[in-house]
Length: 87
Image (cartoon, rainbow, N blue to C red; front, side, top):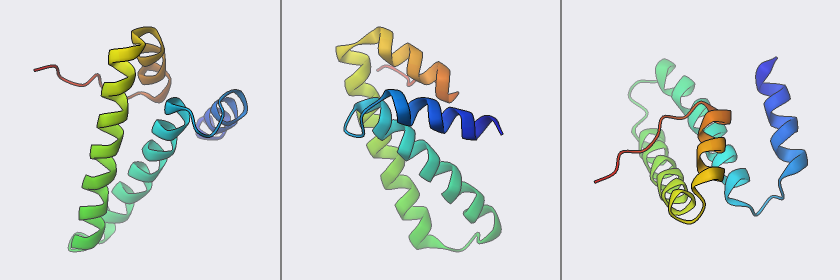
């Protein structure tokens, strides 16, 4: 039930091209693929797709952290994502 409220909150207040919405969509795809891979451990093509989506989300989060730290902190708090490591 919490996921549905999170979906409506983000999709209504953000436009579809915003970084926040894109990260939200990637997070949903990651959750869906992760549950799929728990059942199908040898689905290597889905594993590759998951790694690509993780990389895209990581790049978007790095962009957002660099340009607007407040929005970044709010987004990772709202989506329950760990903060990325800095080098």
